Amino acid sequence: MRILCIGSNSANALGLPCPPLTQAATDGAAAITLSAPEGIVETLRRSQYDLVVIQAPSPETRLIRHIRNSRLSTPILVIVTTTTPALTAEALALGADDCVLTTMDPIELLARLRAVVRRAGGHDSQTLHIGRLSVDVATRQICVDGKLVPLTPKEYDLVELLSLRKNQFLNKEAVLDSLYSGGDEPHGKVIDVMICKIRKKMRTFDISEPFLTLWRTGYRLNESAFTLTAAIMNTNQAPPHASRESSIPIRSGINIISP
Image 1 (cartoon, rainbow, N blue to C red):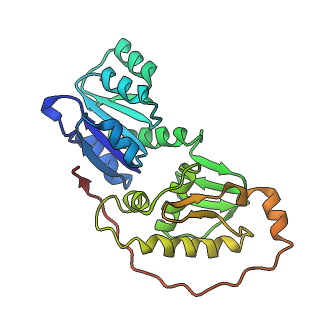
Image 2: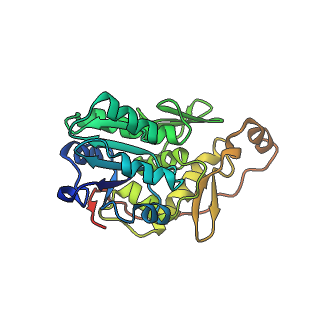
């Protein structure tokens, strides 16, 4: 999960994340990029973020209005020191997806972050259903036709990410940031290797092409591959030849990135 954290006042101009957000990001393996409000629209148009977090003493309606008037659909969660029902209602009406206090427990904050991102991707529960594919975010398990697909933790993270952003091509930079949280990122070739390994595992479930590749752009989940029609067509085809694939050591970590 890639989070753009914004401060709205001079005392917090770089949007330094509050302790609950830092802990939630660590627990949820999220990459936080710090930003001042200036140029925020250009930043969101230039890079792919799953979520914008606005930190302010009270709901910052001006910044929310600016983002939404720019026709950007990136989800927005507001973290405030204090608020009133009227101010919270105004922030939500202007386009914020949630508004919480800085005193919120990191466990609940992480759940809210995930829920906002999930809803933005068109999913209404912790289990993402895409045709024959189901992704259980709570148990971190992926199934095809109810049968468990044996994935490594990073392979699961990749499939979950592409499932949540199923309508978008994600470039390698965005994928690496999401999977490795801005810390010790391996070479981008690791993503190609993981894609190959997942493809091989999916073929045993008659999923011939789970991902679409756009040269110099990235990868996207291939929804049509998980439809029942695709399964019927695959039964009439010879299984593809499995090629040898090398593996590259993968390291994980989290780091808060300055702009």
